[in-house]
Length: 226
Image 1 (cartoon, one colour):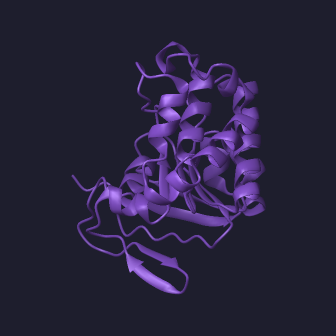
Image 2: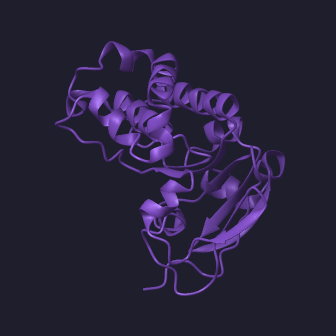
């Protein structure tokens, strides 16, 4: 079954871009395709680094991670029987990240002090909000250039979503990241995004700035209840 249809998006260095869409419209599939988890039938996925363009199609996920592209998957996908610290160490698998392990670990504990307090606690025994913090921190441990975040607000209370979005914005600015985030929480996502796309039934139906998104009829229909 074909999920995505002639999808075309772009990000420039240092941007935060949101991909809006309700469940089943292809957001997660697009993220997984970029990461090499789902192979596309056609098209290109171009990553430009230091003036060199690389087509990611056909690359294995580990090769893509080694280029500095990391995904925070929907549902966190932590190792529940390992501690917070052990999960973070696993995020630093690629060679470049290992060289910066202690620096990245200290930064993660600075952004998410709760993780530092619970570094010896099993990940599976933590709350949903704490697990999402850990999933984000584990991604940061890989020293990424591009961070792909899939539905970070799922299952979280509104106050936790707001705190999480603030943390994502802080990490993006401090680490000079480029961020692509899929979301259903329009109001929170647009607080930290530079611009965004709306995907409906696997097609990009609208693209624009936050202001343009707010006035779009699709947003009013699906997110604002008007």
